[in-house]
Image 1 (spheres, rainbow, N blue to C red):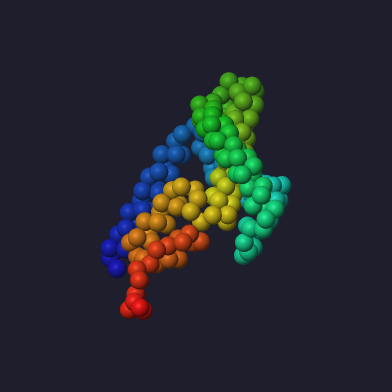
Image 2 (cartoon, rainbow, N blue to C red):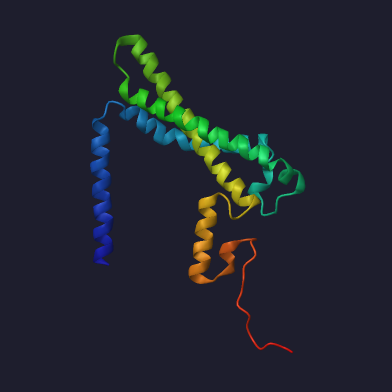
Length: 181
């Protein structure tokens, strides 16, 4: 019990030290605003993109229907392109927001800093929502995709021999009992 309290105290102390360090940075206001707004933007974008590309069945406990399976390769490419496009945009927005903090260089510096903060927050929220939707849709269509999830499931099956880790993939079992001639 004392060990758990020690670990919780250590993590609290490390969190406090990290917060104190972040507080000294010039872009702290943008970081805290992003910490509060990125989940909101991601949730709104996740719901709207799911409706736009007709992945309504993800929220329900049902299998994918044939029209959804037919359009999946195009939808997958579209989601993956969104993930790839918004990642560098988010990085550039956060770098600009931290390198040009609010209050530097007068009015145009303020406009640039607020614009960079908005780009950073919106692109990070959209990147998070597209990546989550891509991962959820891949798991909905095939439990073994993306590749790292399939590798993880196969490894867990080999360690435990529990077929639930494999999902819909067939698995080989050892023959049990006697052979009938």
